[in-house]
Length: 92
Length: 416
Ligand SMILES: Cc1cc2nc3c(=O)[nH]c(=O)nc-3n(C[C@H](O)[C@H](O)[C@H](O)COP(=O)(O)OP(=O)(O)OC[C@H]3O[C@@H](n4cnc5c(N)ncnc54)[C@H](O)[C@@H]3O)c2cc1C
Ligand SMILES: [Zn+2]
Image: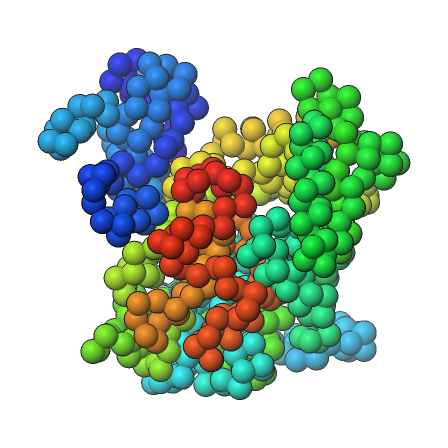
């Protein structure tokens, strides 16, 4: 993993300050959605080899949830944006 | 290939140039009754039991690298059956029993060493949890012993008993548990399967799964198309990638786990010791190196290497449990890519495609399962029927609300 992460709020910080929550590409279904939709959301993972979007919590910094794009093979980190900004951009 | 003291002497005298390979290197046939994807422990044991126990002999194992290059050759070799949940415990105990007869069955020395696995506890609450676990083991007919502090001090004197945060109060011991030589397990199963006519094809990567009218007809590989009657996936850390070739959506994330080995020492650690304040565990190999590891790095990864921060964390846990460890030099560190499932338990099941079978979700604990996994998977493939001890390990358990969550961590793979 890249050793340094650029947090949009805190600047360049060591990656040990972050806790990784997991896949950020999933979209939470509506409460009334089908069991199958909820099953897929809770349990099924694309588990990509290559680029992936993840929720990272900046535990030892701003305590914001970020959406980090990185590579699961090379461990290169491409970007880190605030979760709210990411959601707004995706119009969720 | 057979081995004896005599064959060692004879081959030594001829410069060790005349040893024969333990299994053939066949070219793939155009069609097999069963193709198994993945020549790790599970793929090989599945092939072995298919041929030996279930009479299915026209079988190929396709392995993209060399045999044993995956997790079967990267793990820390611990075998045990001290699980708590009913669906798990009967399965792992079935495996433990197969381990106990494996060397006779394979006629191969897998160096099974039932040296005992002891899990330490550091608080009254943790003691209660281990008493409960021990009792549930007894209910499955598996022996477990609670070792209190004074007795433990005689057994394992060098632990940090008076640690301020994690004092060692005792442990739960499974005496029949221990270690086995991982490479020998892969080789033993490979030789056994080969002797029963199974084709083991190394350096043959599966790149696609061909389907017609909703059933699998064969696989595209780096050695061309190979047809099959049934296809069985046992690709461990790459299960999502192989599953994707047949549009399977799996409850898996691939994560990296690291392990470490030190310089060789004289015999000093007689058991497998598991820390209760973290995931740290340690044993001593027959060569003398201390073999240890702890938790996964915590982020999904397909790279067979880990992070320095995790390595440091592992060392810190180790030194807090055994202060003397700080004086030992680490020789090597490595990582393996594991198929973490959403409840931390494995999956052995059929799929939505009639002749496609799935074996995955072994997390960091699939080595001990090698015999039972192969046996149950072979049973399923040959008879289209789930083996009784694998009933709780079905793929649809998540949808049905029957997750087998040993750690109680919820659908969060990096916490199992
Ligand atoms: C560091 C570490 C320590 C561990 N310690 C323990 C332990 O102490 N006890 C325990 O019980 N378990 C342990 N495990 C877990 C255990 O090693 C695994 O769960 C188990 O080995 C997985 O099953 P396998 O042996 O079949 O996997 P593997 O050996 O990984 O086999 C899968 C095979 O599939 C092949 N493959 C993948 N994709 C393709 C394709 N497209 N085409 C052809 N072949 C393909 C791979 O090359 C690989 O050889 C540990 C794991 C690691 C990484
Ligand atoms: Zn921050």
